[in-house]
Amino acid sequence: MSKAKLYAYAAVFASLHAILCFVEWPWRRWSLYIEPVEAAILGPVAGPLAALVGSTLGRAIFIPDLYSFVFGVPAETLGVFAAAKSWRGDYKTSLAMLSLMLILFFLHPAGRQLPPWTLIDIYFALLASLILSVVKNIRKRLHSTARVALTGFIAVTVDAMVRVTILVPLGVYKLFGLDADSLRALFIMGALDSFAEDAILVVVSMLILSFIVRRVRTASQLLEVSLQ
View 1: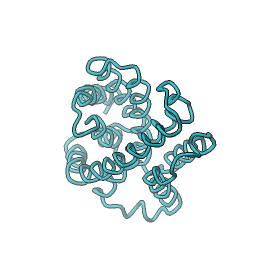
View 2 (view 1 turned 90 degrees about the horizontal axis):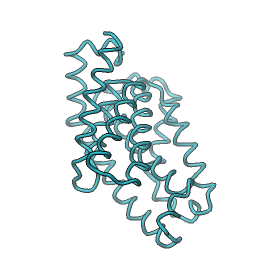
View 3 (view 1 turned 45 degrees about the vertical axis):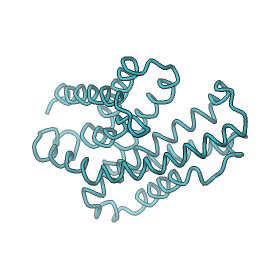
View 4 (view 1 turned 30 degrees about the vertical axis):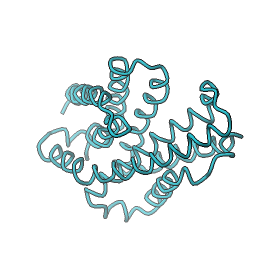
């Protein structure tokens, strides 16, 4: 299949991504749930491009808020990129990205004052990336459903950690006028939401998204370009 056709698919997913930015229940936009599909079907170039265009358009149309652009667009784009690399067996990319962002977080004075347990899902994603980047036999034995679920977990954790990096190491929290206590309270509340979000995305990936990916793999010639 030609690159033109691949990017035509990317345009379709960008449109879906933009539309799902409008849906927000119970607390996060549903564009999150299309990230693993974009990663698995479109690959590490067209996938992030679809996320970039879709998240930008979705926010321009439905959420005209500067902070939503600042946090959401880079987080969703990089989440899809890391997940797409993981889908293809390259877990070193997510390992490097998460390691760098964690280092930046703990080097920052505000980051060191926040409870370390609030990033426990990030630690699990980092550990999974480390193990899978070293032990190749595990990668080969992963069932397709587990593979999609893991791709979803990588997507959501990298997405979340990018937002954390923008908030704390890059100092955007200061623009909100947050003091140490307010930032701590926000972080704890956000962590609890994030853990629930991780669980929901993994379940959705196993029950629904894996089915979508399998259907695409068997029904479309796109398989020859991005899924092998």
